[in-house]
Amino acid sequence: MTDSLTVVVLGNPTGEHLKQLERLPESARVIATADESHAVASAPEADVVFCDMGKAGLLKKILPHAGKLRWIHSVSAGVESLLFPEMLAHPATLTNGRGAYKRSLAEFVIAGAMYFAKNMPRLLADQKAGKWEQFYMEELFGKTMGIVGYGEIGRASAEKAKAFGMKVLVLRRRPELSSSDPLVDRVYTHADLREMLAQCDYIVAAAPNAPGTIGLIGGAEFAVMKPTAVIMNVGRGPVISESAMIGALSSGKIRGAALDVFDKEPLPTGHPFFTLPNVLLCPHSADRVTGWLETAMDVFLANYERFEKGEELMNVVDKKAGY
Image 1 (tube, rainbow, N blue to C red):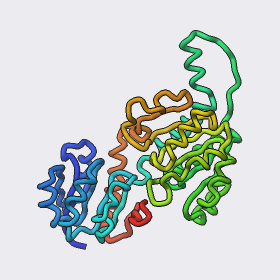
Image 2 (image 1 turned 180 degrees about the vertical axis):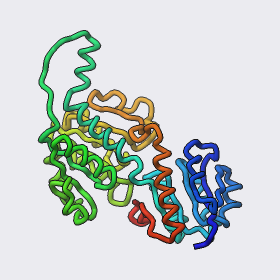
Image 3 (image 1 turned 45 degrees about the horizontal axis):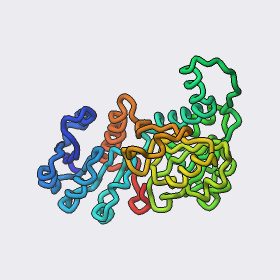
């Protein structure tokens, strides 16, 4: 490896989380910019590109000029906006922030399950009305959670589900990777998705936007769910057919939904999710906790150390698979 590496950071140089770049070794030459002309001019010097939130368009502009570039890191875990033809054609390794946000997202999953198990809407309505009326609640203990997409978020959700005494079923593209996972009661392939969903009390969508996952949960999948089932999406909006979900929620085909991600964000004014009484809506904020971007920077800095030493990088994205 060379003694000095040039890191081009596509982002606001005054961003609070980018102060973490001061932890890079002195040998690193850092060029931080959100200006297109500056970024393009700097691209030929780049050994490494760090792509901050919302800078996919700027990355696309500089790639044709980045002949030395060997590694691109996305601070976001989702990389669908980065997989344009220029990225697919470029030989540089792509890594992402996978795992940086898993704890908070898994907590939101449990919060969503508790919201319905303990009938929080009724509690809040009764309290507001000054009404004292006892009723039966549910336990999470003994219930079944199905996880569609068993990556970092999925496994963190499974850990918390197991702590509540839940049974955990998972679906993943390569089921053999979870064959000995102590958190998993059974692993399913995509071909057996409906068989898994039919058993679930709580369903977690934690899959990325990738070929084969868009609309993975649609009308046929909602048709096999229990009427008491709750679906929670902490992955990517398009993994679930929005129209099919609205139909299932409106008709009472399923009990409810806890949603952090959507097809279009911000959610358009007047969207049914704002008024459906059986929806817990979160404005893509379940991963936004104090220090969330600083945590994401830790992933990049740990990987930089590996890169500098010529070691295998963590969180390498399969550009063709999309995650």
